[in-house]
Structures are given as structure tokens and as C-alpha cells.
Length: 346
Image 1 (cartoon, helix red, strand yellow):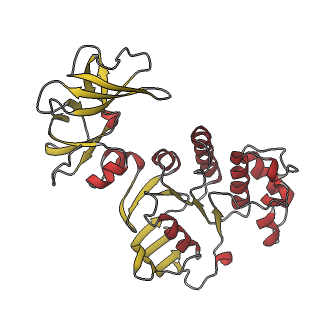
Image 2 (cartoon, rainbow, N blue to C red; image 1 turned 30 degrees about the vertical axis):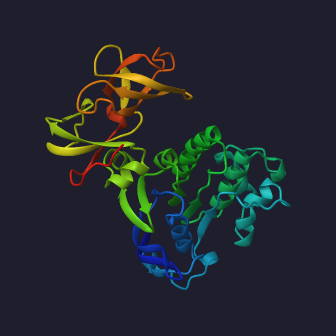
Image 3 (spheres, rainbow, N blue to C red; image 1 turned 135 degrees about the vertical axis):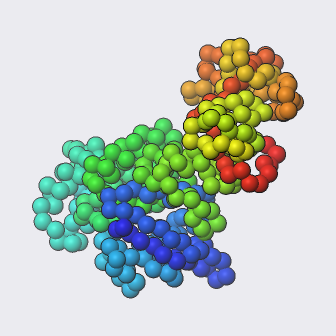
């Protein structure tokens, strides 16, 4: 592993902001640290960078970085606000790290990076004239210019509006893969983490609770708290037989689920309207979103009769408030939880 963190802790007085974290990032891998605000993920990133006093070990290719100052770790940093130099133009910002390290061919490397981030020809632009998204692209190009052995990104897109954030997440994923960059990305946004990362490390209360490929983490959260952070609004008990899970709101194919008693985490997209099959209910609330309609439905029969559940419908679906609907389970909105424990009220 290129980066290996073991037993890393950061304390502020008696408060453990980061507690005994073990983490590894392979060469060329993008790992996302995902968790709610205040869970310690940014503190962990700063400790890896050498910006935060910590106990435990941070190693790079087996070499302990204890005592190695920030500027000698050869790590690139990108923060939420970009932290560009307002008195320098775009080229001056991108070339800054190259100049500090006295690296040659600065103009060539600057042009190459601006091409990579989609800002070719912007060399002479003032950074104060750029949009927020363009400024973050410049910050990324500046961090990549000296070819850092590890790129650390702390909520790099969170200051942008959602539509721009979604586009830049796709662009950033492409840039990191084209450049072959080893990266550690801190984010609280599920979509951003799953777009960027080869693996996701979920963090809660200063500790890593689960690490795995995005699809695995999404499908099989390690516990109920993790499932709820990942969008599950209801947990129900189910029985799996031959890859099909049956629960009080219907059945759904889950080929990866083991046979026997399990629990299912249902996201708002787990139940979708169906023309004439599925669990019957009545729409009590309808809210339009960009590409779908979010419903609140009161179930009409079965073990959960009278219960309000979340569901989704197409934007042209005629399911208005007060109208009857049928709901079926959608595999993409269902998570598989460990069987132990009781579900909480939805």
C-alpha cells in the first residue's frame, strides 16, 4: 500500500476527534472518506498531511512520516475554497508549486494541466474573474502540477451548487483516473463519494466503521446507523429464499443475500408505483423533484396497514394526493443489513 495509517488518533483535550484509525490507500487508488459533519474525517485528512498533531503512524511506501514537515511529504492539497492566490493569474497559480520546487518546463506543464481540467487557454485570466467551478479546476490543476505522490481533497466541491457539483464530480473522477493519481477525498455527499472513489471508508464519531467498494457499501451497510446515513428511512425484517427477499411491503430479488432471516433498509426510492400490482395504499403527499415525484403513501392492508411509507413515481404519474396506488419494491433502493438487532420505528 502507498499510504498506510495505523492507530492514528487526534485529541483536543479530552475529546478524541479521531480514534485509533487504521486505513490504507493503494498506489493509483482513490479512497473517499465519507461521513456526516463533525465525524472527524477532515481532521484525519489534516493529520495525514501533517497539519494536525496526532499519535499513531502515517507511512508512505513503508517509510514512517513522523517528523517529516508538510512541504516535504510531497502531498498535494485541495480545500473547499480552493485557496487560490488572487494576485496571480491562472498560469501563475498552477505553476506555483512547480516554481517552489524549481521544476523545469513550467509553461508546458501548466498548459498540460489546464487542458486536463478543461481550462485550455485560460493562462492569462485573473482568478477573480472565474466562476466557482472554474476556480476549483484551477486549484486541482495547481495541486496536480508537481505530480504529488498523494492528493488530499477536503470537501472540494461542497461550496458549489448541486448541478455544478454533480458535473465537476464526473470531471474530477476522469481527471484523477487519467492522471493515475493516488488520492484521499473527504466528503459528506454520498453521490460524490461513489462517483469519485474506488473504495469508500465510512466514518462515524472519529472511527472508521466500514471500508469497501462503493457498490458493496451501498448494498450492505455494516449496521443500522450506517444504513440510515446512507439514506435508508425504514428498516424491515425479511426472509430470503433462493435470492428473493420477502417482507411486509412485498418481495424483491436480492441475488447477493444469504438465505434466512435478514433485515432490509429501505431508501425513499425502494418503493415505486405500479399500474395494478403490489401493496395497496393511498397517496397523502406528493412533491416534485427534478426527475421524479416523491410520495408519502399510507398503506391500506397487511402487517403495516395504516403506516406511512416513502415511495417514488414518474413525473407524469397521475398519483395525486388522495388517489389509490400500488407499490412494488425496487432492488436499487434496498440495502441488506445484518439480521441481529431490532428495527427502529420508521
